[in-house]
Image (tube, rainbow, N blue to C red; front, side):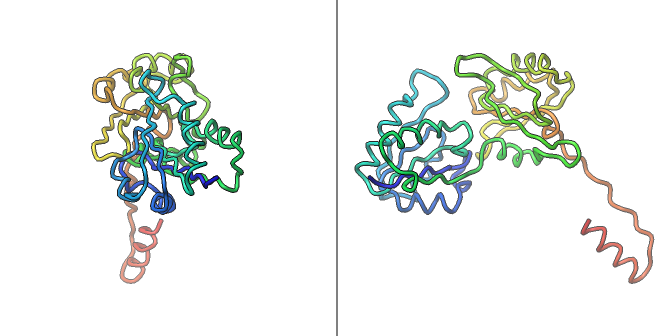
Length: 259
């Protein structure tokens, strides 16, 4: 049995991968990669065999999870180091649990498995828009959820100060109605980002009641929707007015800039 490393590639561009993840790729014999990982990541492992096991939601052309599990076990039995390359962070909606269970069932011990963390789409969207998901005194909790359940049902929620919905791009109008039903005010702020972490990322802001307006802009693109405290734009703080002279004035200015 070989070693299996789950590497979180981050959302979008290849340079969002962690240094630890890149070093794992450099040592890989085989890489099983997801659909949304940047092809430029191949530069880290030109010597490895790359196997496409991509899936997009629950579409019919997606690689079945059972097939991925079986291939992962097969490669682990044949090679010294297998990298399972996942978009975003492997632990966030990355089907990591199923694959860990498959390896355990095949007798691969935990000591021969490693999970390398990464940047998830919610964090990339917050960075893209310069809108922190947590806000001091106002946004102390964040909830990450998928907009669609496995059964195909759309869901909204209001369990945290900031709610982030993954895989929401096709249902923005319906999501707006679900959010109001869940208790969000119609004028609550929403930030919509598609292809977060990529050079062609798009971002738009809307009230909950106007969320449908984002549908055309983000159509056909992986999209995350942030609602609540973390969706508000950061307002510019007014510069402090300092009344002092000479050295005292300079010291006051230095203290103000450090605040």
